[in-house]
Length: 219
Image (cartoon, rainbow, N blue to C red; front, top):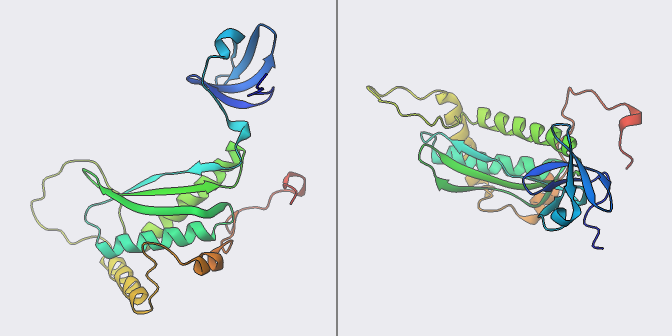
């Protein structure tokens, strides 16, 4: 009677994920990700916890970035500001409540958590946007001379010069400029700046072929 699912819905039922193919009087048939068909008695199905992905309006993007512990505080500030600017400017990301926070000191890393929603409902489309976001984050880390953490133990016999000193210096100069111009937007960006950044990035990114006209979604 509640109609929590319909034929064609992609959902999680218990510990499995699949697409509803048939809802009968006695059982419900699900095609799993392994392309097998699972028949579940309705008496059992009605007691299972269901998560219907077809009902969602957007998809949660929430990676954790683990930075190496030898990065400087200004490098962390640079990453926080630049990633926020990227999230606010991306046309497929909802700027509210998009955010990135330096949440904790890990055993081998400085941990930054991202919380954002991607404005698509199809998981395949989401993977394309998430890949683009991940690549843009890598670009930011590279520009700031920031290394990702490697969870290994090592013995340091001598002090080695840090890699990318020129990029570290440039990053710290960049952050200092933000300070002087009162543009170090931490812990949060002003609303007017978020609006200025909104939809300023190109997606698909430059160099990617445009979708054929018959595959483009109607506006």
